[in-house]
Length: 323
Image 1 (tube, rainbow, N blue to C red):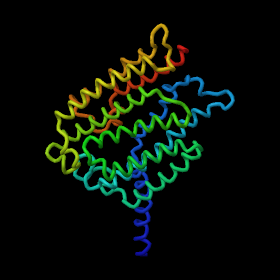
Image 2: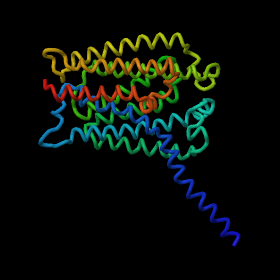
Image 3: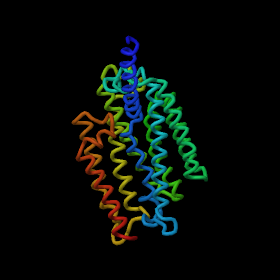
Image 4: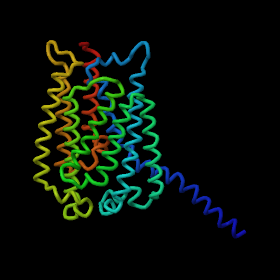
C-alpha cells in the first residue's frame, strides 16, 4: 500500500512536468521574435519583379508558398540559435534583472533539453533548405546565418565592440537575401541598406536600454557594455535614424516595382516609416523601453498600427497602381 501511495504523486508530478517542460522550451525558442523573419517576404514587394507576377497561372501560388517555407525554416534556425545563445549566456543572464527569469537561467528548463532541442531544430532546418531550393542557394544563406549568429557571435563577436551590433544587423539582411534567393529574383540594394540600418537602429536601442537598466552592474551581465556609453550610443542613434529615413525615401523613389509617373507612388508610405521611427525613439527615451523590440511591436498599439498601415499602403500602391 505504501508503494502505491508514493508512486501516484511521483507519477502525477512527472506527467505535470512534461507539459511544463514543453511550455518552457517554447518560451526559450522565443516565438515572439519570429516576427523578425518576415523580412524574407521583402522580395515579394521590393524586388525587380511585379508583385502579381509571383502568382503564375501554370504553377499556382508556388512562389508564395516557397517564401512561407523559407520563413518557417528561418524560424527553426533562429530558435536553435536562441537556445545556443541562452545556454552560453546562462550565468550572465542570472545577473540581469529581467533575463534571469528566462527558462535556463531560472532553472525551469534542463540544459540537456536545450542542447538536444537546438541540435534537432538546426538539423531539420538544413535539409529543409535543400528541399526548398535544390540549387543550394537558400542552404548557403541558412548555413551562413547559423555560423555567424550561432558560433561567431555567441562565442566571440558579442564581445567585440561595434561588431556585436553589426553582426546582429547582418542577420536581417540575410533574411531578405534568403527570400530573394528562394524566388530567384533581385532585391534593390537600397532596400538591403534600409534593413541593415533598421537592424542597427534596433540593436543600438537595445544596447542603450541595457546600459540604462543595469547601470553600474552592466559589465557583470555583458562585458561588452563597458565599451559603450550613453553619449556614444545616442550619437550613433542620431546618425542611424537620419540614415534610415533617407535610405527608405530613396528606396521608395527608385523602387522598380512601383509606378513612377506622375510621381513615385511609394512615397506615400514614407510618413508611416517616419512615424514608426519617431514612436520608437519616444519609447526609448521617454518610456525607457527598447530592450525587446519584438515585445514593443506587440504591446505598443501606435507602433504596431504604424507598421500595419505601412504594410497596407505598400500593398495598395503595388496592387492598385500597376506600373
